[in-house]
Length: 491
Image 1 (cartoon, rainbow, N blue to C red):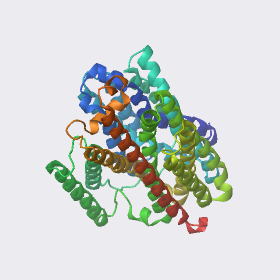
Image 2: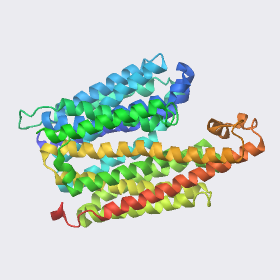
Image 3: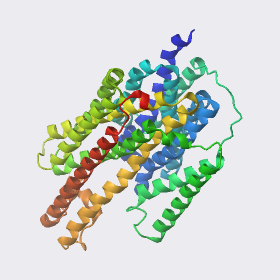
């Protein structure tokens, strides 16, 4: 079988691996009520998600570098093996803590799956082919977001929540077999050493930073001694990483890639769009259910519009960027992001689910156009030897942006609601946690009309501030897109 004949099988294998990594968030979210009912420890609820996000983000750069040294094939196989180990343990979990540890392990494997899958495609396809194929890869995110909740609901209703994790095993094995059988690498082996100290500083620093972003305001109180301790350790580890990387010849993050405009600017935009994406995913269902008074099903459909727009735009971007270029395709995506976030700013005024769906759809189109353009541009810009770490840097920036978005936007929302509670002089009777009752019909009656109106007004004002913020972020992202090189010779 020739190299050309093997490519469809390799593409199918990597898309399967990417699907496993992408579907984890949505499918687990559907099963969480059943998991909590079975395992207890509701106080650890957020860590089921945070642990996966933390390790997948912290390890993505390390795996990208390892793929450049040892090749894509062995690192991808290692990543999917670790991912399947975590999935197996998660399915057998008997306590919430055991599940969280299993999700940590899952996240380590996921840190290899997504960037290396995209890197493999960048290796086996030409620039012209890559544009079309990357559109297919980007659509994996949208497809997983649509069918993830459905699959999760099916397992919960007809089987058991444990199958949410065990379903990864046969699919992961198929992906692994496809890579083993069909991906043949002929790489020049070098004596390049692994920067273990750099990897340690980076993983430690980013992990602590993610803990701060995710847990501050919840288990970690702002300006508390533990907050200052973690913040100090984070700064020390990241400064040690920067200092160490400048002193060695084989850094885990080559300095050169950040000096390349077609890597630096897309990565900045990707961080910003990651903040937009997490805000839409996190707060749109709350707005539709609480502010509009619609059902959870309607809220889900309004969010699904983003999942439809993303793969559709990714496919279109893959076809047009070869004709009009990376920059113009990205600018079109940036315009859609601005339009989508502007619609969200007007959502508190025009409270209609169709309006919410359109806003979500336009943001999805913007995400699809920009993400596909950036990946193709980055992989076209760099040689094979650093393509893995360059691709991984873009994946890392999206995860990092999502984490920053969770921290900043949640802080804005919570602060606004708390100000309304203080102004109403209700601090002795209600708190931020009382907002949960707005989603619970039977407990809503326990609140006085004054308290209910106060929480409702605070939530509406806070969400308005969140949507104004993502509008500003969309404008900032458009500015950096506009600064992209106009001609491919300038890459």
